[in-house]
Image (cartoon, rainbow, N blue to C red):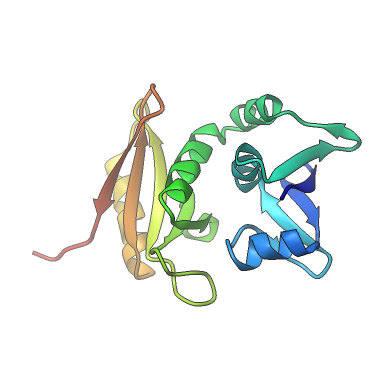
Amino acid sequence: MRVEGQLGDEVVTIKATSIARRLHGKSHYGKMYEDRLQLSLIEAAYLMERGKLKLMKDDDEVSPEEFISLLGERGLYSKYLVYRDLRNRGYIVKTGFKYGAEFRLYERGGAPGRTHSAYLVRVISENDTIHALDFSSYVRVAHGVNKKLLMAFLDDEEDITYYLVDWIRP
């Protein structure tokens, strides 16, 4: 089953069909409104790659290559790679924006509205510099909202290494 979505500036919008409701209700993609499902660009790229989304910009179809290029231009490609990897591993991944992270991650079997997310995910390129104060703030925020911090390091070959960071008291 393939659903058609309309590319906007920051989101992809899908009419509230039974397929759209199933994508949200069963697989927890996007945010459901009465008349539409709203996906992030990263969620849309994942569904497009899996053959579940036909993406349109006005009346023209957007190719997967064009869309991946757009993600790169907007600085979202590395985040997409981590999102895809976590989704492929069976996790539910939602935005972590309000926590200052790229994503919130639910344990397998957990879901929004049923359980709380267990992790905050930060995406770091192997070429990025992390300052000690920034790292400390990532850990402090995660601990403060009762979550663990998962650092996703992406290398130049697009391989991802995950490190679980937890707050401990000596």
